[in-house]
Image (cartoon, rainbow over all chains, first blue to last red; front, side, top):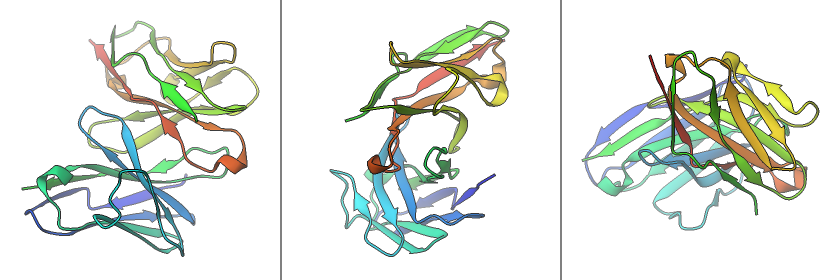
Length: 115
Length: 116
């Protein structure tokens, strides 16, 4: 079945560092991908919709300059957390939609820890 | 606007007993409904969906869910729980029309704990 690969699975870095997370669709093309953030013991919060060849659509309250999204090809979307601080520590998950009535396909997530 | 409610933060059940994880939804028009499971430090795995047709849908790992239009519910069930079913379960909905896009609305999640 359809697979979404997310990398890296775990990142620990110092405050002020920028971190890039990649999300790839392995056997299908995705013109749209979604980026979620999940706090401990909480639900998924949709951060933005990544659109191939155009600007991402951010949800209300999400800082565009802090969370840079690039959808450079039909199989790759990236999320860059710029100048990360401890409050950015979280679990980030990407997904790609299937055809209209099909489920979304999720990556395995990235645990980001900022020291 | 569409929404999903999972009224229970946690469900506890003994292994071998039946389990139910509740979900109610609100959406304009016909709903497309999904259940996902999340294991620790992993992404979400698709369990089952309701699009149209039979109200009782069967999915992976022996799970099933019943769509009830009058009660706007889509409860997840399993006749006999396993310890390995312990995980976080999410219900999700989107409107069944292309103009509403691909975004899913998720519930807050229910943690299922199955004791041996």
